[in-house]
Amino acid sequence: MNSATRIQNSRQQLREQLKQQRRALTEAEQKSASLQLVDTAMQQPEVAQAETIALYFSFAAELNTAPLLQALLDAGKKVCLPVLHPFAKGHLLMLRYDPQRPLINNKFAIPEPPLRCPDVVPFAQLDTLLVPLVGFDSQGNRLGMGGGFYDRTLAGWHAGRYPQLKVMGLAHDCQQAGHIPVQSWDVPLPAVITATRCWRFRHSSL
Ligand SMILES: Nc1ncnc2c1ncn2[C@@H]1O[C@H](COP(=O)(O)OP(=O)(O)O)[C@@H](O)[C@H]1O
Ligand SMILES: [Mg+2]
Image (cartoon, rainbow, N blue to C red; front, side):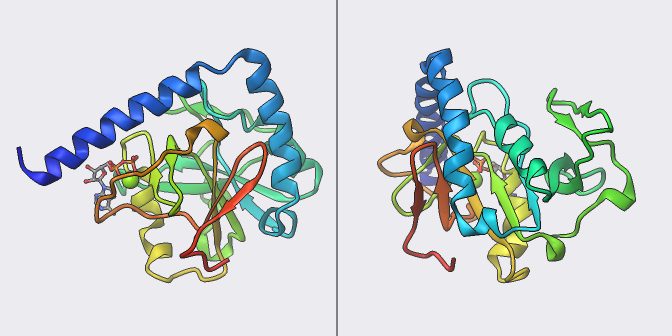
């Protein structure tokens, strides 16, 4: 087995272990974490001061983003949600979310805003992007679901384009891992917000 395969195998094991920890949370713990997240996230300047902010629709045992989504709308922010890119395979587009317009399930059964060109918000116009993750470590390394969608989508930002854009992860406290073995394409996060606190990492430019 070559070293790249070995790294991918250990990442897959860690992914399963972290997902299991997330699934073990009780309904009451899930609920209180999703409500506490609203307070913790709203206290961060990157969220509080953002005029245009993208987050995502959570599913399964992920930290429920619905209360935060509502709080951002109530605060009068322009809120965006990711949509699978229609041409660039494995990439995401950010679309303005209009609560009046019903969401449509994509091929992964994740609700998305309907793909209308005027609703596409370019990265140059985004203040803050909140991303999902399965695990994070003390360096801000990120483990996702295994599709690499955010690594591809954030490659330009990681290379220094969109310097105005603040990227932060959202996660349950139990998603912190000791050490995440990284691959060349992985985009680390400058910060991760959990229910109880905001973690900021060394390579942070925030
Ligand atoms: N910037 C990129 N360009 C091309 N392929 C990528 C890029 N980022 C990720 N990938 C591909 O996506 C796959 C999943 O990436 P991985 O980092 O393991 O998933 P995740 O970040 O969701 O945990 C990898 O097999 C990798 O080849
Ligand atoms: Mg990755």
